[in-house]
Structures are given as structure tokens and as C-alpha cells.
Length: 291
Length: 251
Ligand SMILES: Nc1ncnc2c1ncn2[C@@H]1O[C@H](COP(=O)(O)OP(=O)(O)O)[C@@H](O)[C@H]1O
Ligand SMILES: [Mg+2]
Image (cartoon, rainbow over all chains, first blue to last red; front, top):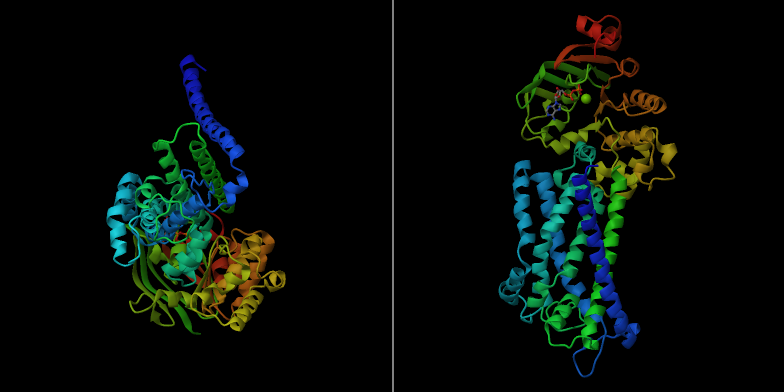
């Protein structure tokens, strides 16, 4: 190899190495602070206590309320985004003319590019007041509005990846179904969706990961009150928004209260790590099926 | 004999390309007709006219008439789903659904809302028996169809195609992806099925055409050069192009 080429390879390698180092660095910071935290708060309390009140005089360190908030908003988001995203994917893949499908996809993806702070205020000032028209008891800050808007944000993630999965279903299966006299709708739901199910599942898991990690929308529109509940009409707090709250507040560095964010961070990390692994496993299965 | 299928002055275009040129062809009920000819001459295209599978292709245009039992199947008021119930198709590559063997066979009934368990069970057994697959799979009906061998998969596809009780069976090179033993099983099967179905089979394999068919139609560059009894086509064809093809001078 010539010198300049070697230089480039070296730089590229260094970049790759750097990302790994950064990841390890983050993990190290999280873990080392969390270890100190767990030396003061037993991990069983952390996992089983039903209250999260680290800033009160009567302190409780149960992650469950934050976990519940995170899962609730994510579930609401998926609840709206999956049917809509999948419908869009089926429509674009099976019904829409090719040229239309090609031009609509980038437009859809703009949804994912809207700054989340804009979504947050959209949830707070438009969606929640609108929903209050139907649901009288809906609080001004609530999981429903935030989750719904988060769902809008992840629609393109689901529709785009699901469309790829549907597209990858062999043409011969389509022909088999049409040849039996199935309609497009029957073909889509009885043959294509099942055949693409692992790809669709991957899209859903990635969307959940995205929703679990989402911060701004829930910080603005869902309230900041840890609340162990499945009720979508009341204020809640998610793991991410708690971290924001502490980081921006005046909690002294190095205190136990401050270290809670690392414990919360580790929980978040474990959650997304599990989700990513599930999606990785599905992807592998999916690839095997068509090779 | 009853004229089951009839093509009258049929032309087919894909955009501007003229791929079927003024074809007239009548097919008798309960007979096996083989379509032969070099690849690209339009055999598949012509075959897929009978169940309107070409309708799915962008740029496809047809002129002339295709009649089944004297009725134009391209009429506006005819539902293509009903047509395909009566005209089954088996494809070149076995294409079972990634579902169980049982689910595969009943697909055509299920999409038509048949839910009667007894009827479905009976259909599965009858069709698998007819497709000469029953003995091999009867204990594993819930197993995935993808676990079957290629030859078994193709027989499953035949079972699936006859489950809606069609009267016509279209087969596009059904044995080209199979090993010799599976091929001969499928050929035997075609012979058996003749008593109930009107069968058209596209084949590249001259011996196969000779073994399974009553009539043979030779296509060349989109034209139907001649159609006659298989014996006549293979021993004493009228057209010199047919002669050249069956003696292997081209194609
Ligand atoms: N989907 C299609 N779009 C455009 N042209 C096609 C399409 N399918 C087939 N053709 C053309 O039509 C002609 C006949 O093809 P086909 O019916 O598949 O022939 P065969 O089955 O005899 O090999 C060929 O020239 C082929 O290139
Ligand atoms: Mg062909």
C-alpha cells in the first residue's frame, strides 16, 4: 500500500476504534456511579419499591414508577403507530403505483425528522386539548397525548422497515395467492404479512427502542410525576425525563440524589439492550428464511 | 368432444412489444395439451391468459377473445377471483406458503369463507391423495410445508390448486426444478388427473411432452406454428420450424 492510502486506512480505523472507546467510556461511567448508588440503596428496593421520591425527605428509590411511565408511553405510541404504519406499508407495497410509492416515502420520513421539541409542544397545546374534548378527566399533562404524538413520530420507522420486509417476500408467494383467486387484501394479510412477520417485528422493536429512549416529548407533555399506574390520563414520568430533571436541577454532584440518574440510566440501557438483542435475533432468523 | 378452452385471434403486447401474434387455439375437455417452444416464445404468457395472471403485469394488453366453456373470461362482469377458482395454476418453482401442509391445501377454501372443519379435513385428504402425497405426509399435516422436499412441495402445490375443484389446470414447467424421480411422479400424476381436469402444461422437455400429452402446440416467436396430436407433432410435423425444433436444431 502507498503511504496516503495507509494514512486513510489508519484514520478510518481510528474512527471506528473511537466509537467503541466512547461506548465503553459511557458504560464505565454509568456502571461505576451505579455501583456506588447500589452500595447505598439495596438493589431489591430499587426493583421492588413502588415509589420513586429521591428528592423528598421521605426517600424511596423504586424504579417501577419510572419504568411504568416509560412502558406506558411506549405502548401507547406503538398502539397507534403499528396499525397505521403497517397499513401504510401494505398500501405502498401492494396498492400504490410504483412512482407514487417512491415519492411518498421521503415525505413520510420527514415525520421522523421533525424536532422532538416541536412534537412535545404539539402534544401539549394541540393534541391534549383536542383529546380533552372526548375524555373529560384528561389531565393537562398525560401519557396519552405524549404517547400518541410519539406514535406519529415513529410511524415512518415502522412503515419504512415493514415495507422493506413486505417487499422482500418472494414474488412467487404473491403469485401463488393470486393464482388461488385471493384478493389483494387477502393476499396482503394472509400471506405477505405472515411471511414478513419477522421483519415487521424487527421494525416494531426498533420503534419501541426509539420510544423508550424518547425524552423531549414526554418531558414537555406527560408531566414529571413518577406514578406507578397504567392509567394514560394522568401525569407520569419516564426514566429519560427523570434523568433530564436531575441533570438540569440544582442537585449537588456526587450526592446520592445525583447518583440516581446513573441507576436510572443503567436501567434504560438494559432495557434497550434487551430490545436490540431481540431484534437482532429476529433479523437473523429472517435472513435465514430467505437464503 | 366438448371445446373447453378457446382462443380467438389473440394478440398480446407488453407495452410496445408484440409477444403473442394472432393465435387461435381450441382445447378439448379432459385432455392434456403441451405447449412447447424455445424460451421467450410466449408459452407462459399464453398460458397465463387463461387465468388472467398477466393482468398483474404493468404494460400488459390483450386483443382477441379467450373463452372457457364458451364464455369470454375477460368480460367486465366476470370476477377474476371466481375465474381463478375454476382455473388452477401450478408454477415452475414450487411455491408453498410458509404455513403448515394442512393450511396450504385449504387456502383456496379459507379465503372463500369455508370454515366447516369436516369439509376442510375431507378436502385435505382427498386432494393430498389425488396429488399422490397423502401417504407421505398424513401424520405430519401440521408440519411446515417448507420442510418438504422440492418434489413433495410441488405435489403439495398441485393439491392446493385442485382443492377449489377447478375444471382447468395450468402448469408452467411444473417439473423443471425437480429431480428425475419427482419428475416422473408428477408426470404420472398429470396422467391420473386428466380424467377430471383439462390440463395445459408448458414444458421444455420434449420427452415429457411426448409422455404426458394428447396434443402438442408448438410456439415460435409468439406465433402458434401448429397444434396437433402429440404423435403427429413428434413424428410427422407439418411445418419445417416444428421439425427443426423437435430434432433439436434450435432452441
Ligand atoms: N413481465 C413482462 N414484461 C415485459 N415483457 C415480458 C414480461 N414477461 C415476459 N415478457 C416477454 O414476453 C416474451 C414471452 O415471454 P414468456 O411468455 O415468458 O415466454 P416463455 O414462457 O415461452 O419462455 C419474451 O420476449 C419476454 O421477454
Ligand atoms: Mg416460461
